[in-house]
Length: 195
Image 1 (tube, rainbow, N blue to C red):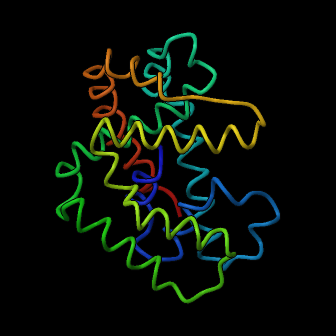
Image 2 (tube, rainbow, N blue to C red):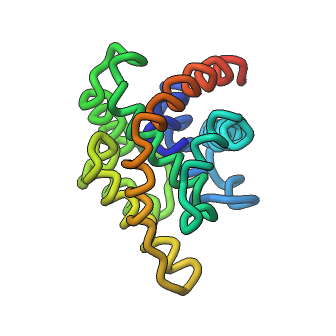
């Protein structure tokens, strides 16, 4: 699952949500410098990812991706599932998506604990550019994939463009939506068993 789902599934505290959001950026022993509640959020993120990656429905969705995108299929489906969560938001929450994301942004901006400067910069971008509600539209998903492509390109030191994967997703859009609708309640139930 991607950021919207991780934030939705996190415990409703700033530290736990921040930990869920930052788990993809802060690895290994570097996590020990953060508050215990934030570390718990990072572990929660990992548990969600582990459950998701092994789940047969998620694996079915990955197989819908064409050969050109199979290597990154897990990451792509995570992002596509966030779109379907945003589209089906009212089935899972009584709080409208715009209010949920606004409250998330405010909590991150008002967090008084220590965070590295690059994390502050990231949180400012997420808030200013409203990345979470962008999941609602195909254009928003394209913008998400463009940002991720830049990040991966810098890490791998070669050009990566994930945006063409949208064609596979749009082709099988209804199947992805059905897969998500079957999978997400199981993920919610799993999260209720976690500490």
